[in-house]
Structures are given as structure tokens and as C-alpha cells.
Length: 167
Picture: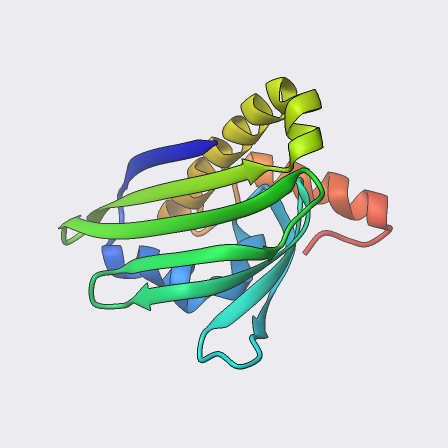
């Protein structure tokens, strides 16, 4: 499954890059699909990774490359939920003016064979919807400095299940 989406945001490209790359471990602050996240070191690598508790399950990611000058970031999942076999995300931030930027996200997900065959018709539309919502969450967070209503509700539901208070 491939998703390729570009959206325009009303803020500087530098601010977008700060949220996506500089604060890479903090996706849980803005993404409704990510309820907990933290940066982690990656053995035998100069790159960092992150672990996330997501609506899809527990995931672990590693940055493959980051070009701060071009504002391009690529990472892959090195530990995936049972429904996924592999996933790679490519992000590109492009300044449009001093206070507007575009964000392009290309996601390539390979579903695990059995879940893909049995439930692909159900998983793919939900995953696509959740990824599009995550991009809207990012836009809202970057433009307002606040979490989207969808993000707030997602955290409330997640932390209620876990018996914790939302961050």
C-alpha cells in the first residue's frame, strides 16, 4: 500500500522541520495515531530511532537518512505490528514563502501475508484514513501550537485504557 500526500501549512519550513526531525522522538505530542513515543539510540549506527505506541500496535523506527539542508527525512519500521511486514516513510519539507511550506509524505507499507489476505479490504481504508488524519494533526499542531481535537480524544481513550492520565 502506497500513500503519497502533500499539504500546505501556514508556517515556516524551519518550524515544520523542527517538529518532524529535531523533535523526532516527540510524535506523541501531535499525532493522533501515536499515543506514546520516545527517541532511542540505535546500536552500531549514527542515526537515531524511536519507539511508539500507535493505533496499529507497538512500532519501532530507525532513521535511514536525514538531510537537514534539503529538509528530507526517511525512516523505516524495524519492529512492526503483526499486520505489517514492512513500512518506510519519506518526508520532504519545502519552503513556499517565509511563512508557508509544503509537507510531502510518501509512505510504503507492506501488509503481512495472512492479515493482508484476510483483512486487507478492511485494514487499508482504515490505515489510509488514519495516515491522512495524522497529516491534518501535524498541520494543526504546527499552525496553532495545540493538539487537534482528534489527538486529544485519541489520548483520552488510550490512557483511560491504560489507567494513566493523558499527557
